[in-house]
Image 1 (cartoon, rainbow, N blue to C red):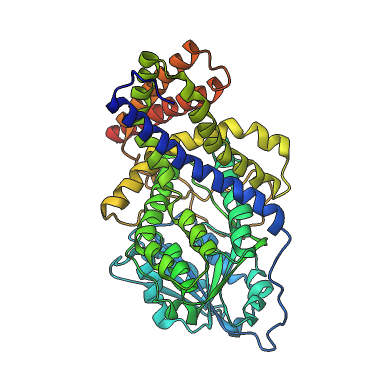
Image 2: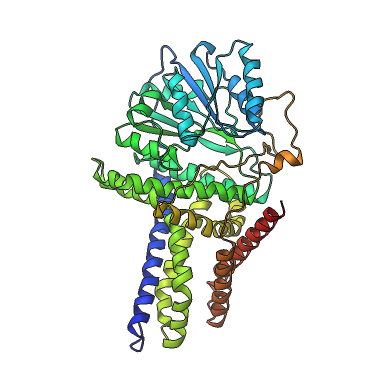
Length: 507
């Protein structure tokens, strides 16, 4: 494989480069396996064999933190539930430090006067962030079941009544709904985000649920059995993804989780890149934190080997960004130089297929996420370049999140700013009287801080410019489109980061 003239250090370097490509290939093949398994499991679903003779009491919890633009909307939405009022308790769990507190209090009082069982639960500190707020509210929760919706979601009035009977199986501890998106078609960026989330829900959640694998609560748009939360050790704030953490602890205790792909709940996508990066950083860092916390426990648990392997991919998938970053920064350019100097071009017959399989696996996965929802296959195909560029723009951001988690660096729970924008297509929303206007000052308070890493993204852009020039010289015409997209993605990421930092410095 290697030239006889290649020095030992060169062989070691190229071997490490190859090992990293193989690791990325495994992540890509796992994504492909999701698509293949979806064809088998897509029509399977747990059958609700019975219905409650007497409906149980349900507590609805709405966690808020400085959500001025959407607070009234979610309060109106949950107060419109058609679940029997005597069996419904609504808790607005508000940790806000801005005018959201007053806006919410006014709306809560309005509905209290109408006889609705609603309370405004506040704290004097943010200890434990969202997990701490939910745990605190549980002290006064009276429901046998807890329905949780984030502030930017708009649940359908009948969503609880339509799905509560999933819990007639006493082993079911949580039911998760599929996310749909209020502002999906408002920009190219929100459309791309929607496609990325669609694949997670329509493929991953469907396959994991229907095949009996471990899956996760997505933090919102779902119902928990109260006893399950307590039995699993309650909400914990030692990771940034308290939802994933609790999901795994509950399932390892023997509780089942149901995912309902046919029941949707509309939520809002981040409207700007900085907010999206901030959200992705929290999800990626929290995912690796849960991996560190739970992976050994998973492998020691009395579950099948198949479940353990699937859980390992599930918990570690955010490491793919870190692996790609390490390979690009430390091994890619030296590897190309060694190929030129020692005539080891035959390596291309090995690492090029690995590269195509690793990246191609993710693209096929994202594409079939649209097919699974009966969206236009041609439209999905046209979005592939945009999906590639979006993934590249997240590369350093998510890799940095993984590094922070691996190092054990703590950070606070940073909420994703939402502006309350709706879709340009018809989406049912509650009518809100005297809704606060979106002044420029108010919106500025909801701008996300640009994530750090602009210089690293610039370095990656320069590296891929060099790689592109090398690929042209080597006449690797099949690889050129992929390398070109990588180059453009990192250039775009660096540009966006520098612009964000400049704007921040002027404020």
